[in-house]
Image (cartoon, rainbow, N blue to C red; front, side, top):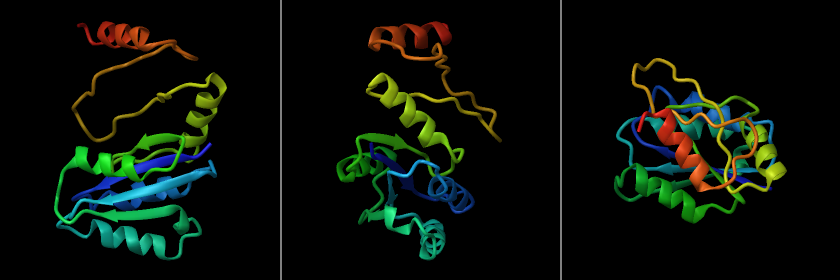
Length: 156
């Protein structure tokens, strides 16, 4: 089962090396990495290209370049349209994942024949709190159960 990892890149010079390294070092073998160059004014893409030059997994990476800045949603849509994987994983370019993140998510998705899988996360260096979605461990059946959990966890 192939996983397409979509990474929009815009103005993330301090973070892109760690992000891309975390993806290139995945223990899961069947991945494609789609870097969406959204015309960043900094050296983000230069750093990414240098990192890829000699990396053994460089052939798993496709760089798609926009002709003008289109924003995060359009960059993700560009990745979706180019993806050939059975599953999509969206990674912000200022984030990173553990070396076995895709392996763990793919195993659960295959085990439960799931449409999507959600993993844990840790917020580092930021005081903002994203909406919480704490689901019970294991399979959750259906959209209604997911939405009920989301609303309950966020006091809605």
